[in-house]
Amino acid sequence: MVSSEMAKVEYADAIKTVSGALTKINKKSPHAADQKMVLATHRVAPTTSPDCSRLYIRGLSAVSRSSQPTSKELAVRARFTAVAAAIKTRKADLMRVTEDEAAFMAQKDLAGGKKTLKAWYWMVEGQAYDQEHGN
Image 1 (cartoon, helix red, strand yellow):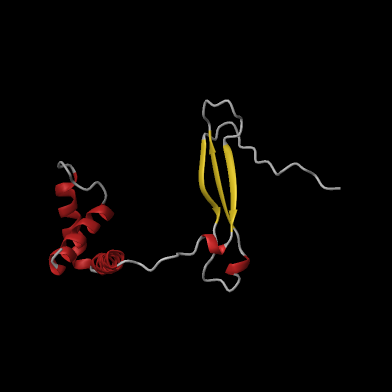
Image 2 (tube, one colour):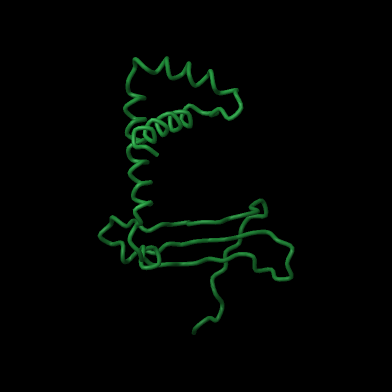
């Protein structure tokens, strides 16, 4: 016997919003083509329809990119990689840690100051990268 009812997801009353991937596809896996991505959306809204939830299941083809990265995108990726490596190197240098923390604390409470040390590292190393590469 075949049932005409579809699966139903019920969220607890305390959950106001759900949005995003519940499971993802591991693209590096040799079984990536067999995996599925499950996306869910749920919202509480004043509508006449009680169906404010959606569940989507997608295969690998829905996740794959259809175009080549632009030169601007490649430049952004290169900047991110270089800045992340510079931050890692800078944080490993024990001679600079105290100096960096003092510089961070000095700007933290100023207008436009970075509120976390991590954000401050990204700002400082990002500026250094941009200055070095003429951006």
